[in-house]
Image (cartoon, rainbow, N blue to C red):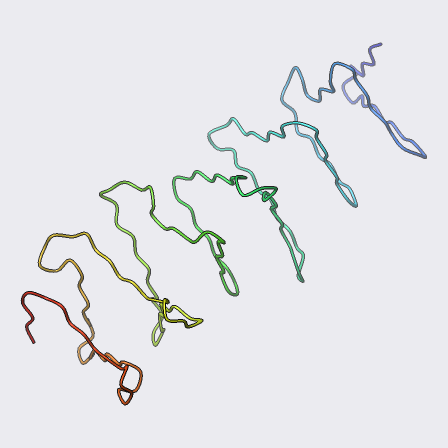
Length: 193
């Protein structure tokens, strides 16, 4: 059965007092033979698929926008943790993540940055605002807890700790220095002050 509105201003209006159901044993195609705009306005939109869901834009100037005006609680929820092996893979030329509040990254197995990147690529963790404080801390305590800074560099400055301000100093504190366990140990073949 073919329904065709071929007039210059022709259209097709389908109304249902109840559910409007479209079923096709071979599938349902919208805009199959030509590219036209599709506008869907709904109070709620629920899309369920028993198999793969694919959203593609083919044009070089095309983009995908997912926006929400929700102001309290989860505004956008991406859930892909059905199992420990479930993977969310994001590939980007440039990835820009901005947060109005706290940006929290939690990983039950740890957090790796630049783990598989190009060996020649450098990474930066920088706080740029005036009077900003950048804190790297291992908290929770315990005899085995450590904050470890490692470098496999072979040059004289494999680890470089420097202040760049005109009057900046460096303070190293082992607790308050008053306890027997408050040690500061340097192990080196050469040590210069």
